[in-house]
Image 1: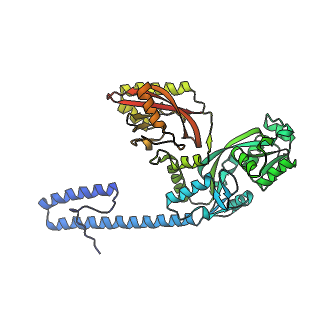
Image 2: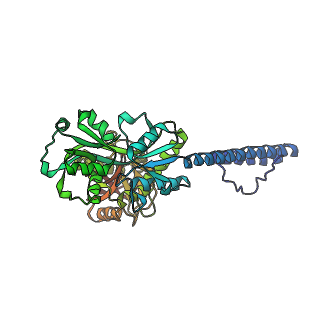
Image 3: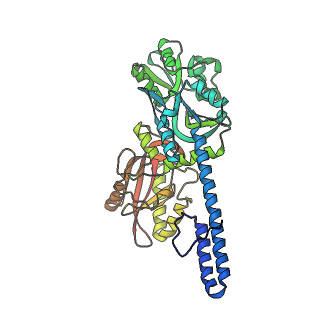
Length: 445
């Protein structure tokens, strides 16, 4: 059957740009044909366009079927987690935590008909071995360390964590280097990344007492069965509180490592699934909602996962970058903004990507951003960070009143996961076009 399409009427189909360009060119050709060619040629052109549209419609249908098949495969995955607050844990019969909320947000973004009710809570070692040995498994939150790199496929990062060694104050244990741990018995959770991290640092495997249960491990420390234990810094406080122990009886003896947590998929999981998850994860972090903060930022703030970090950026480095950018904007505003939005150096430091510059106009429109161009063109008046602070309003108001200054707030870091305390320096600039702009750069602290 031949489909005839009248192209002198508006097309309803959401056609892609290349096809629309072809249609426009064909219509122009047909206008010429009306005056220079036969009616038969005119009809042949219409038939050709109809065939082309049929082919496109078939491609769209095939693509829809493909998407539906991909979503069905995601819905068929088995989702596994453990008791590991504040990332994933069960409270009053309901799964909660940063990673649980992030996964549920990913489900919504991908239009996947799954929720936290489809996640199974298991002892870590059991869930870990299942994901290693059985296809169609997703495990979280999983520390991504070199020894595990080829064992799974990865999506993330979700959030960083500090791995610490904890002891009892009464035991007066002093640890200044990993080798000192070889003098003590060390409780660790079975199959945890901490075992790999400490082994790499020279801690002997025979000093480690592997425990399948975190609560039992803490009780073992309290009862003197082990001299110290290894756990996450944020989880340590929560576990002590949940067990009704006195936090003053415990102390951090040593900070062993900082690792990033990910969603770990069985190694045979298709790259299509991994790509869709990762794309959706990136969007959760970068896309700012109407209130000015991303879904990802809100989740971290909800669990008060806000961290201090030394990013090796000094206040002098920040001020220098802003002053350089101001000078460039005064000479060539449009060209400078274009380079910023292309993430070019020096507007984004190629060595330390946390050092970058961005700019607002006086109505708090983002005119350029050397780290996240998706923000360009958006207005941020009245919009807040994840904690509710209207820091952008403060920046622009401060620049208009005082020309320069600093504002503190919480924000994400482009080269790693998490929510951090940040301070930003701003300076008022007059562009080469005569307009006023507020140029900013910041540092985490």
